[in-house]
Image 1: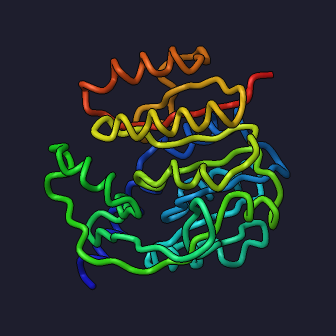
Image 2: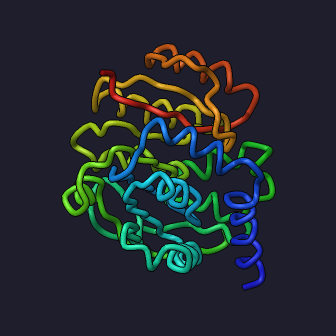
Length: 246
């Protein structure tokens, strides 16, 4: 129990306690979201993005499978009628799945055994332990769209399960993001290929939690791949942002 409390406290500091981060996030997500828009947070964790998007006036669907994180989400946003908290995960089809939990580092809890195996080769994951698991309900992005409408922006941060999440989406959305981790480089390129198949997107990259784009210019998929190849040796993760070309 103490280890779980420590893990949640770390997450709260990471997403709520860094000076200036909220302001930078408002600027970044303000490029995608405005009042009345719908935003999907797939892997909402403790709600750092939910807070930003609500301040932008968006309606938020927060999908989160971790029981401890769900308690935080309900505490912070449970009375907000413009936040729908969905317990569980998104995947390729509805059902149930096993979630491997890391009590001390809940940000890396994952439903992808292959991703866990990949990142354990990364020195930054040397002390991470996945010490328990829970069975969670799985829905799909298509089902979430049927219930809540097409999101203007969809964030997918699910520690290696991104391809499965996108497999449950049959139409392009205006904008989305997914995580990039150098030690799982090939898996990230698989996700990029799926996004390419969904629609005509252009891309930007933001280094981990900086809330700043690495370049002011939007890139095509081949340019993004080259950028990720340059980033890969540095071992620093981040987020890929995609928007439909106009």
